[in-house]
View 1: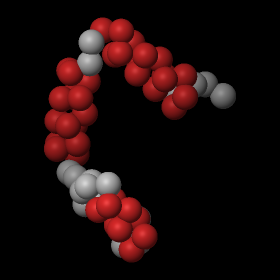
View 2 (view 1 turned 90 degrees about the vertical axis):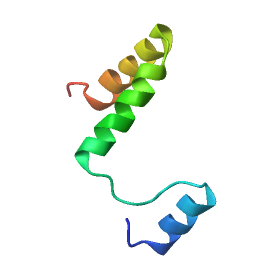
View 3 (view 1 turned 180 degrees about the vertical axis):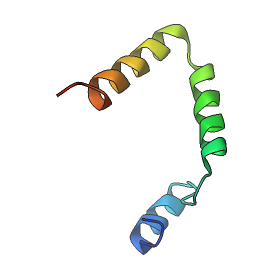
Length: 57
């Protein structure tokens, strides 16, 4: 994806950084977002993640 010119152009248009993040930086970013959520929002995110991505098939 990082070599796809269409993806890079769309990311730049949306003012996103289409570059690579190491695991430590990614984890830090996720924790910052999760810490900013109030308990209700956190519960909703948790529900979506558990049901959509970790649902037993």
